[in-house]
Each structure stands twice: as C-alpha cells, then as structure tokens.
Length: 418
Image (tube, rainbow, N blue to C red; front, side, top):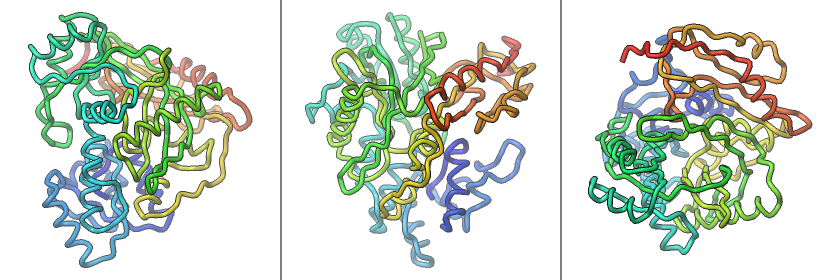
C-alpha cells in the first residue's frame, strides 16, 4: 500500500484487508501523518504488517524501495486509496510486473486538462474548455468561451478550488485560487494551470465501473445532489448527498453508461476501478471529471449495500489480478446526506444527534463536536453525514434528507481562529 487517505476509504480498507486474510506493507514518506484526532495510530498504520519509510513523491526512489521489499517478502499487488499516488502505484506495479493500469495512462487521467484533450482526440462529445497558465491567457480564453464558467485546478481533488464564475471579477479570484498553491497536501508540486469549462446544465450522476483486460463493466449509477455555497469567487460545488441506484429511465441509463465507456476507452484505461462524474444535458451526457479510483463520500458503501460488490474489495481483487465476485446485497436503495456548515465559524451546539443513534434505518452517521471550526467550501469541508438503506424500496434518499434535517448545528459565525 503506497500512502492512504486518512478518512472514509482510508479508514475502511485496512480492516477489510485484515478480515480477508491479506497482509499489507505500508510505504510512506511520513508515518507521523497517520494519526487519529485523539493521537492514536491510524488503522492504516496500526494494521500494517510492516511500515517502510521512503520518498513516495519520487517514483524512482519509491520503485527502488518496493524492489528491496519484494526481494525479502512476496508482493502480489500494489494499491492506494489516495488519488495523488495513483500514478506511483501504476509505476511500481509495472516495475514489479504486477497487475495494474499503464503508468502513462494514470498520469493522463489524474490531470483534468489531459483528459479533455484525450476526449477531443478520440471524438467523444465534450464540454468547450480552455487551459490557462497566466491571467492574461485566462481573460482571453474566458471571453472566447463566454460566461458563466467553471474554473478548476488541473491536478487537485475533492472539488478543491472548483468555482463557478459569472464575470471577470469572479474569474480573477478563481484563477488566483486555482493557480496559487505550489504544492498539494502531500507536498507534491502542482502544475498551477487553470482549466476553464463552459457550465454544464442538467442533473449530476456518477458511474462506478470496473475495467479488466480492457473491458469495462458498469456497477451502477449514483444520483448526486450538489450545493453551491456562495464564496468570494462566485460559487463552489459541494456534494450534499448521494442516492444509489439513480432513478433513471432505461434510455438515460444506457446513454450515460455508453458515454462513460467511451470516455474510458478514449483515455486508454484498461485496468482498474473508476468513478466518473457526468451531467445529463439536453445534448446528452457530458463528462465533469474522471477519477481512476473508487467513489468517495460513502458511494462505495452505497454500492456495496445494493449490489453486493464492495468497490474497496474490487480494488483489492484487481490489484491481485482477480475477477471481482459480488457478495450478498442488503438493500434496494441506499443514500447518504451530508451536513454542511451554514457559515464560517465555530460549532457551539449540536441538537438532534441522539435521534440518529436511535433510528434503526441509520447505518452510519457523524456530527461535528462542539468547538470544531467549520466553513462552507469544497467536499473536504462537510461536517457530518447520515447514511441509510431501504431494504425493500426506494425511500432511502427521503429518509436520509429527513434525518439530516432533524440535526440542528449551531455555529457562532465569525469565530474562526484562523
């Protein structure tokens, strides 16, 4: 395992590996990163058979460490839950002769502008876009594309710095935000390019897929609720809820699935799981973003509950070169609704949380602790969630929304320490 996320999939994969009888070695540049809020070791660290410290941001050094490891103990697969290390995983898998996607393909699909260029080359219908490295270039491209626009960095994740802008003033702030940071949260250098895209109108969905030996199988489609809290640059995009399976007409489902398969073929993804976000526009499905990993925001759990296929287990099976096999399903529909901060500030009180613990429909929930600093922003700023499943019907989203609405988070606005 090369690095890991700290939340969600990062918490759930280590016990899954243990319970399946697998043994894993964590390779990390900084073991100190893997701590829980109370200071205890993170499961990814606590459940590892061994921890190897190596410079995971240097692919040559990383491969050398992996080869040294493989020389003294058997290595059957390479994986990660962290987007930023997907190209590194592919590079190491190639170097060790293990199952994986081509490393050059992963370097493409983890760069949003390169994906757009690949779709254009492959003749896949796409949104009008441009890439800007300078402010003058951004202004000219925006004027050519026309407002409103979505502005995003080409190599960040979780909706970070993705902004909707309606004029040049908003563009200036969004461009600075997208191109300002020099490194991501794992200290990797960023390209500091802004991707400008025409705004897509229509409902948003994500498609969970498995590709093996160049053949893609769609596991299902998730309906996504998206909030746009106001920020300086215009509006950000925060996923406020997910429902699986999405309530789609057969023709809509077929069109979305066919579009996603065309996208994956265009970028050359031949192996791995993928989480592809699309909007169903009047002209047909159009790509928002392609992610060559399991869906976050508990989508992997919704898929497991309904289909019996756990995307995290699929991740493991593919890393080992195995054909994924579904387990038992537990629900007809499943949904998660997220709690969002009403404003920048500090949580002073949470009311209604006990109701979640007492409701048998709730399979998982989290609410913020008093004293926590919160703010509206991207998906990293969500402050809690309610996850439910309907065993026999399609009421999961209504239940999740109702239960989340019953939680009252009192925030003292303007009390942030930073």
